[in-house]
Image (spheres, rainbow, N blue to C red):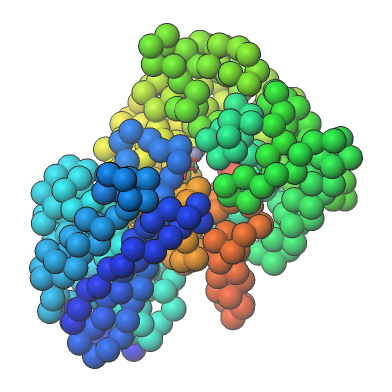
Length: 439
Ligand code: PGA
Ligand code: ZN
């Protein structure tokens, strides 16, 4: 049953703490009938320049990272503007929020303030209708087929998530032969444990990185890829068949703007764009790699185009800092044949409606979407419902450690419980069959 309307009674924000112990914002939207929708906002470390603006206080308190101004913007201006507004009209709410801010990147009120409200409104709407969040988000997204996403799960971390212990930021496992979300999580749990075991045997440190992955501090990407394969085998899984590899290079954090080259400091090498592309191609030739994110810098458009021409029919090439969940950048990518997939991060965009529109645009252009968390997270599992609702087919929320990560996986388990939704399996990897054949 759909209720006709549900009016915003009050909007209240507070400062809470994220998985790195840094301040972030949580918002409660309460309807006049007393329904409360709550949401909190994540935060990245390896951020793209074109992300919506995260408003921080600066100054001495909380090392400058306080969000009291964002909280005040919610409790003042935004609460006044939305009082009495229908929470079922998500697009209307988000239009009001964006107009009230008045800037291109939500710099005035803060994308963290705006997003917290936007997400909380949708939760209040779902609850007012007495339907699960994913179902309500599906109605807002319109016409998509919901499914449980295949997870890509962080096993080894480097870059800004692990004290630059490795140049490349993430090596992830995709449990390719899993037929249910439960099986997928079981398999990646085994891989994560096997990796720790192999690393301990090799005398490598098994320190935890920001997303719950391991931080071996290896001095080459090939060594990390070999360790991934060894971990699959130790877990009793066949590399290239049962489990495959995804990589997030996060190349923006390697880019040396002044010298116009990529600085692989840990490897002790500096590479131009053509050499970066050669390196990435060699990974795909030598290892069962099915997806690479941000292989090149966010402004290296020519590089992205050549890389896509080289690898676009073999693997998924995902733009994270490259697209920043921004419809204009995604459209340019589509027009110029750069990348073939897009990472979807709600706080890069700033509103729920804006995010749903990016997923719809990606789908229309046959770009695969990957719904993603940030390295700084809270216990909020909103993106799990978002990934299911949009039928994105893929989700990336970190390792199978730490409750900020498990809250997302466990929400998928809960959603799967009634048995009515299909598991996406490898559907989002249209090129997987050929990779498997050559593995
Ligand atoms: P971030 O990392 O949240 O630190 O940006 C996640 C990613 O790069 O995908
Ligand atoms: Zn990334």
